[in-house]
Length: 167
Image 1 (cartoon, one colour):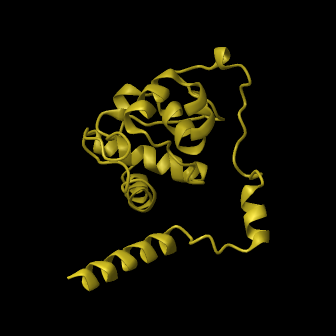
Image 2: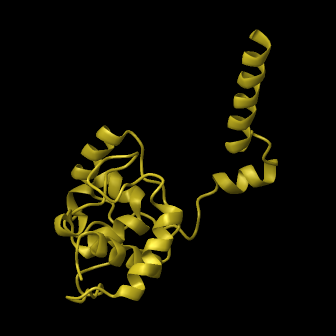
C-alpha cells in the first residue's frame, strides 16, 4: 500500500513539474521571457482617474467597432473555435463561475468595445477598472493575456453575442 501511494505521489509531482515547465528553461529563453513583449499593448492611460469604465482601455471605441443588429454566423463559428482553445478552460457559457466569470449576459452588461479591449488588453484594464478588481477578488486569478488578434477578439465577441441569444 505504501509503495503504490509513493509511486502515485511521485508520478503526480513529476507530472505537475513537467506541465509547469519543470524549471528546465535555458537561461537565454528565461531572459527573453522576462523581457517585456513589444507586441502586448502597453497601458495607454497613465492616470487611473482618466480611465473610462464603459470603454475600457485599448484601441477599440464605439466608432471603430461595428456590430450589426443580426449575428454574423460565420464569425460566431470562428469565435466558438477560438474560445474553445483559449477561453473555455476558465469560462463557462452559463452565468456560473469556473475560474473566471461565466459569459451569459456579458454582451448586455458590457459595451462591445469594452469586451474587445479586455480580450486584447486585460492587464491595464484589471489594474484600473473597479468592477474588474472586484471580480478579481472573487475569482482570485487574473485573466492572462492570450495574445489574441483584433480579428480573434471580434470573432469571440460575435460568439458571445450568439451565446446571449442574438440571432
